[in-house]
Length: 607
Image (tube, rainbow, N blue to C red; front, side, top):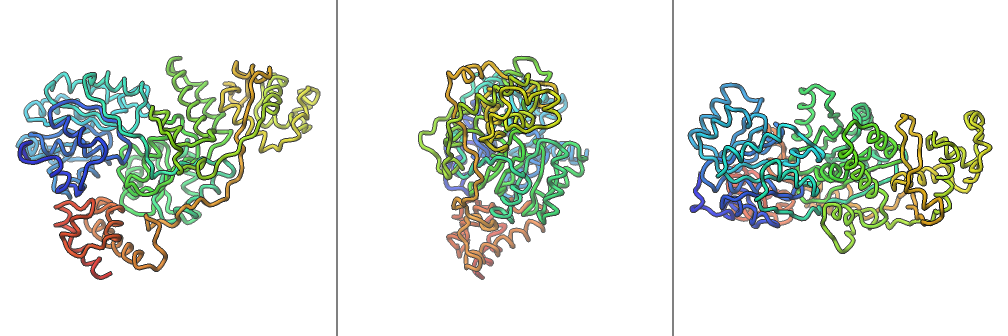
């Protein structure tokens, strides 16, 4: 290990990690921690959070202790750091007693720059006693939003981490998360005793991600078309709300010739581990998962995240979509959303046993999520605005910017829909209400004599699909609520009164089947999407990928740990012919240059 006086943070960035310059506030954060001060860091996924504690751990005397909630993440980060020449280890339940003893010995002898530890192990008396006998360089608390009961991924063991400040008051702490709204930030500061920490908030913008929301219309077929058209050979994540839907969707994708694996808490830990390992180590694998999958997944070349169901909040949506395009290359956040999503989430919220304060918070979060789906202006501006970041211009890289949405004045139609809910006693679901509005005579309608109400047949001007859109948007805006009866019955809310009285004008989003192509670059396997099928660049790209896969297979590590796609892309673009030139490529540090340089140069020189 080096002393702070003998090496600079820029030296470490250049020589160890192979990058020529810091991004954003990385350098300020690193200097804050190197100087022994606390920091609370909000930085988007792919923004370079890890360097903010890895570099200070290398530079400061002692060992940096990194709190990480996931074994898979520890394994990947430790493997990657070792390939870069960093002295690093982890302590978790995957190790044998003998391995634990060996690592603890390295720790006591001061041989480690970093040690990754799970929060529950860190807070054990044995571990705390061990740390009290060594020189701790810093504590890094990754995925810090897990401390918040208001957040989207609460983990109770994180609350115990306040003990670090009590037992090691002189050791600097850095807490990091990719997403936290103001209430979550406050709770992180409170629970971790970080009131005096300097707050660093980087831009939440991920400009390489294209946000797209589609109305559901045969969701499976829509997903298949999206994958086949735009990402036929890419790694991706598909999120579903239920375990059954995960299993069914994964099997259906397999039947369509797509390498898809399910992941949810109902599978055995060995199956989950095997599927996660395949996703990390193989290319072109699609994981179909519940929200149980994803936190800490450090795979940079995920080209898309697809949502088959509506997330419960914009925090969850941002966190999940942020797993795409961590390498900075183009990626998609694609979602299909429909009326049934609104009904189901409203029912889940209404039947929740949470205290009223939390239910109100969840209600506001759901309303913000629904508003994001229905918005007709730039989605990125809306998403960033939710996190308190103002963007003046439209992004030009979301569906609403690329395919401007039409709206229509629908006050009369809104009044008809709301009146129909009232006239039928606020006891029926959408399908029944649409039948009444369209004047459809059914046995149930005759049974309840709703063919006699004033709203029967007054909505023949709209199709069933159009009426479903009207009801979806009325629910999304809070004019209608879902009853807790389990049947999806709709009720009027106080917000509906001004509409019914004619005091408020309603404009609806015009739902259209979008078939227009938006300049989307197709075919993966070529992340810059400029390669023609038989071009020289494509040949070089495939040869470099083949060499990377060969080395990854030999060493039993994911391909991206050898080099990211973005690094291979630079090799294709600049075609270095000497070790010195190869060392100038972003992501090629000194250790990797020594270890892999000759093999990749041989590929480049043969191409």
